[in-house]
Image (cartoon, rainbow, N blue to C red; front, side):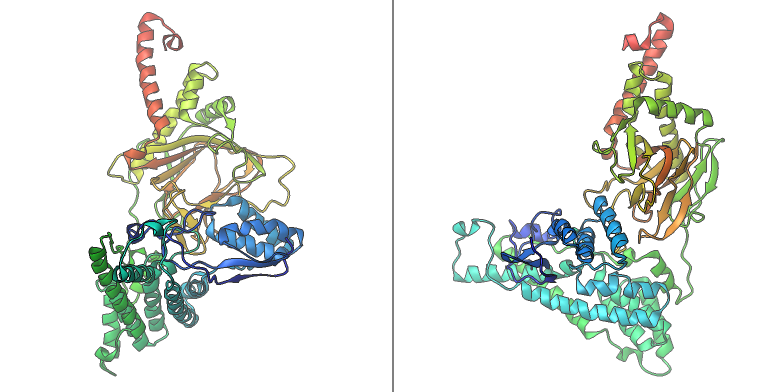
Length: 606
């Protein structure tokens, strides 16, 4: 493939079909898994990569940009290759190999700022650090400039999205062969397709590439940021205007209502605040959206398909930092997470709580297990672990510079019954994990039972000869129940994430290695908020959501071992192997009692 030039180009192709209006109405208009065609009906095509080849102009979707890496690399077009890798990674943030490739390209080219060739212009100003970054740094004048530009970009993108909905009537595969309608029915059906597509532009414009779910409260957030920013620069009229614009979307938001009243009081002496109205574009946008919804409901009834207007949430999804700043107008305070509950065991030592770890729902404990128990678990690990266990057989799932080995509780008990490890030692693995579960359940004051969703003993070993100039992590920054998207400051609770996980814990078994610190970060996956050095008996526990992004620094020498525990409050997602292990332990206890009377070896009896 002889590449002469490479650039993103807005597609002029027609929209894709889906099987039924009801699927679209139910909110299933998100992009499918990477590498598969979009299933969204009556939606415009996304941007695509286009390149000149000897055969002419060829266009590829974002999911296929990874195919460009090898030819770009061979042509020594390293900066373009870095942008291609970055573009693919934006839609596939869980693709760890691509993340490593990006770091390598940065090193080779010295390029720090990569370009997402598929970035939506209206998102760049708001999400890619510009407006929100200035806001967080209290550079309010610059934040206003960026956020106003983002708003203009959004409304422009909305017009473009709606225009792309126009076109011929679309059918799924050979559906048109069985389509029978008179002229008026066909016109009505065609119009409903276009109307539904245009109505869904709200969702389309709030959904980042590769994600299934839109960013909550996306458009209103612009006005929410702006109302406080304008207040801080002393432009109270515009502050009130933006507050009223936000209240069009969320009329019951108490914090913004209080802010609007406060802005009224500041203006009463100089003008009549009632003359200040919400912005016309926001009011027009809402009127049109409501009218479209009413027409769709009416059309659905007349044409016989089901349509349900998606339920939108209020501004509870605002970042805590923003809520605190907004409340500062009235001088109000935000409550912190309460102190933890009992640790249950007198020998367990409390070290740090959430506040001391600079986060939410976190706790660090020591002496959860003794030095002797750590040594016994290490001996068990040496006897039962297999490379790639728990990682779909991949011995180096997160980095090529370390080997991962693992084992489950059920496997330990099985090896104990077979005499390959001491049965008492195998049971220790079971007992310490149960001890950890009880501590987590008690400390976080949970009102319902905490169940195991996965229990895994894991050791990661630094591979000799591969530790010089390492710039990767042993385990990249992630969250345990959602897909972390640092660019959007979001964590998406959707597959392939383990969305049912609620709490996590790591119980460390040794300290005779180099590197391997556990770290918490901000949502940007870069700013470290806490770093923890593992040692025997130390346990870190935290809630599993996007409020706690975390990872592991590179293990550069030796072997780092821990018992990794994930918990759920939903009994439907209990770990099957754990249930089987519970049954084995109950059987073992029963057989042990019988053996003491009859002098029968429990292994023989089983």
